[in-house]
Image 1 (tube, rainbow, N blue to C red):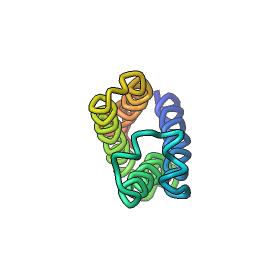
Image 2 (cartoon, rainbow, N blue to C red; image 1 turned 90 degrees about the vertical axis):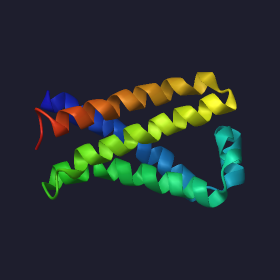
Image 3 (cartoon, rainbow, N blue to C red; image 1 turned 120 degrees about the vertical axis):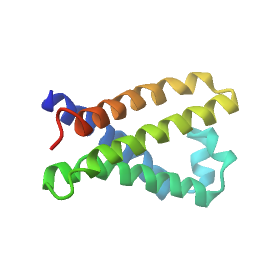
Image 4 (spheres, helix red, strand yellow; image 1 turned 90 degrees about the horizontal axis):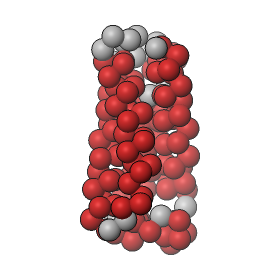
Length: 123
């Protein structure tokens, strides 16, 4: 089970790091073509979302690897799960039902990591 948790954490980290870095490094206008939801947010809010995603990506991996404050892993996973719930709400509000599937998958991965690292497979 520990291996499955590491794989899930790795998938979360890769996905959220990539998505977050794009939001942090590109202008809002560049993002609108691929991520239409950004039109509902200011440029600063989009960058803040990107920073949260990158922080979550780092948080689900780095504390577990370094053994420094490993309790941050399930907290970061919980934060990412909450982020996916909020993202799904935005997509529902915008009428983008097809965009919710990735949110559900990422929520499930984050919830799995949070459950495992808070519970029976804590560091």
